[in-house]
Image (tube, rainbow, N blue to C red; front, side):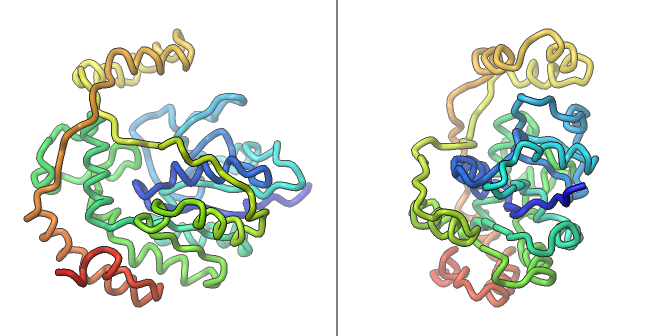
Length: 304
């Protein structure tokens, strides 16, 4: 049997542009990405939604699956052409320091892309997303930070834990050569996407002159109305029944009509921002030392 290995991985962090990177990379004719945006094969994350564990159907697109079976995982790349490289974009791969070793064992020649965002902004964005879709019922971020932790991947509330980057990034530096790791800073690359994508394509050893359409924004904050009804419909039996009756396009249309509201107007209190900046300060200092990137300056620590 022909050997199989994924060539590159976008490993996170969540809420740091991985969905946009998936779209941009997927436009390149020399890149093959599966119909599942987040495969989660090499991480040990869990989900409260049992449908995340069901094998994806050919021809259908999914945002998230938890692919346990290596055969299913391999089959998702079966249509890769000989002139294409295979990629896996799963932000859960940054969490759990054993994941880097699993990916290395799969392909020690793999290239790793990491995108990081100011840890305070990432944590807050994560909270806003969870509140907007009804996973977090607490509208006050300070109070939400004190709630019991739910460690599931989809809908979990590890706001601070998933913004503490040093150990997670170090796990990749420990097993992969530095020239196999491309570390992007969200605040930088979102300001100059063309230059960043040219660098990424060069890093992946594909045509870096290819122009990507990055005019469409991805994974924007969305607020939902009728949250009580939405959460009721998320119940396992109800959700399965709806999926068996309505095709995906009609489900998406119904969700937009019944539940999508205006964008939320939630802001981060300045005092809490300062507290969280202090909370992450040592982690950012160690990460800067590890990566040789002036993160304290980029993320506003030098102005404190």
